Amino acid sequence: MKSASRHGLPETHTPPAAARIPFETLVREMLELLSRVSGHSPRIRIDPSRVRANDPASVYGDSTRLREATRWVPTISLEQSLSDMLAQV
Image 1 (tube, rainbow, N blue to C red):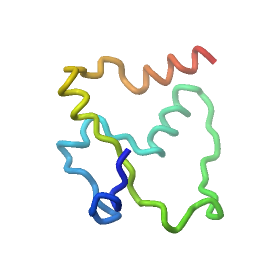
Image 2: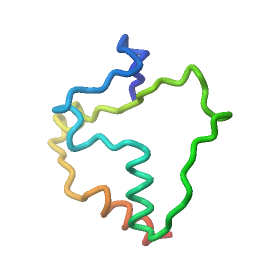
Image 3: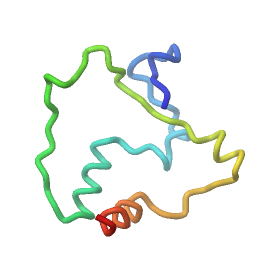
């Protein structure tokens, strides 16, 4: 994963829309999706004592080179992947 600050980008840098869609998923969105597919509604909160001041605001990965090298494209939705994962627990 790349850290925005380690690559000379401002902490609030967001990749261009074309680079984000459809692969960008925020952690909160993933938790909400997991909550929906699991049928549970956990209380999600941030513990300020565990947030480090020097953590980058955005951390993201870029699968472009892998997708170009392998011609891979996702065929299973994130929601289906989470449902499948929960079915194995």
